[in-house]
Image (cartoon, rainbow over all chains, first blue to last red; front, side):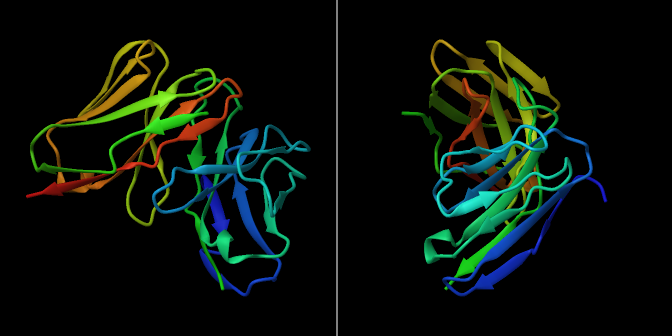
Length: 114
Length: 109
């Protein structure tokens, strides 16, 4: 693989169910990010990780959790999905979390919560 | 608060030039990014400005004025494949990107 992969591509989920969105990168980037993208709004940061073993909260963290056990993987978990979490979720990575570091995006996961 | 403003939609003609503006108010400034996003796809990096002035990359150029909190993306010799959304994002003092809602560019033949 090259770049960032996300799984699943799309998912329909019943409210109240638990769901993990997977993200894997093979660029050995230190920093990784989870965003959600909703119509009419800019990308909003959910959680981020500057390096393996550390995570931080973004702008809209409630209802989501992440872990960063190693450099390559950064899963996002919805503990109990609600309809307002219907969105397109993008994972991104950058070499460092610093000035000028370009973020590269995965293909996204389209999640619908009913 | 932090805010990025850009027009919701613009229309231009194939072969022409279009300028997409972006104004911002953020807590700190560590550079401004432009990304392109085709419908149903991921954003892809176009340009980065941290100093005032114009950066040129082929048919695309990006301009920054830090004192005015203003940037624009200039697309020349428009092609149909340039139909996409263009996202403006500012890196704030915490090195986090604050994103505009994007400008949908429609190219007509």
